[in-house]
Length: 321
Image (cartoon, rainbow, N blue to C red):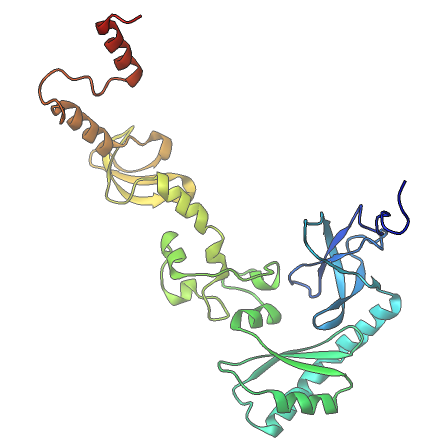
C-alpha cells in the first residue's frame, strides 16, 4: 500500500509526455514537459518560460523522455487572447525596426551595422532587434534609447551571421528554388572546400558560394555518399579490366556507382562497379605466385596452404590419430 506522504508517485512521473516546440517558423526544436496537459496535440500553441522570458511556441510533435534529462514544464495552452496579442505585436514589428534605424543614425557609431528584423514576443513585453555587422559594436546606448521610446519592458540587440540573415530574409537560391535555410534547415552544418572537391564541383566562387556569400549549405547533403562510393571505386588513370577489355579510368561517377573507361579498341565506356576486374591486383597476385617463397626459397613449401590442412598433414606424418 502506497504511503500518501512519500511513496505516491508525483503527477506525470509514470507517463511523462515531452513535446517539441518551435518558436519561429523555421527554428530549432526545444523540448518541454506537457504531462499536465494530456489533451495537447501537434499544432497547438502553448506558453512557456525560457531563458529569454515568457514565450509562445507551437507543438511540432512528441518524443519519449530521456533518462536523467530535466525538462521545463509548459505553463499553459495559449488562449485566443494570446493569439490575438501575438498578431497585434507582430504588426508593430516593422515600425520598431524603422525607429531602431532612425535612432541608430541619430546617435552615430552604428554605420557598420545593418538592422535586419525586429521581433516582439507574443505579449510585447520584450523586443529583439536582429542585426549583422563585421565587427563587434557596443549597443548599450541604442538599447537604452529604444527601451525609452518603445512600449516594451526589455530590449535586446542580437548580432547574427550572414547565413542567419539569409534565413530571415528568404528568397531564391542559384538552383531556382527557395533557399534551404528559409524552408527546412533548422541548423547550419560546417561546410568546407574539401566537400566540393570530393564531389567534383568546380571551385569557381560563383559555383560554390550561396546568396549569403558563404559556401552553399547543399554541399553537405551528398558529401558522405561521395566519400563512401569513392572508397570502393577505382581512381582516375588506373588500369582495370572490363567486359569490353582492358582500359584506363578517365572519370568516376560515385552516385552511379560506375566509372568511365577508355579502351583503345572500343573507345569510351561506362562500367558499373560489379563489372570491374581489379587488373592491377590480379597481376600482383600472379607475380607473387610465380616467385619463390621468401621463407623456404625454391624448396618444398606449404606456406600458402590452410592452417587446418597443414596441421592435419603434420599429425599424419607423426602417426597421430
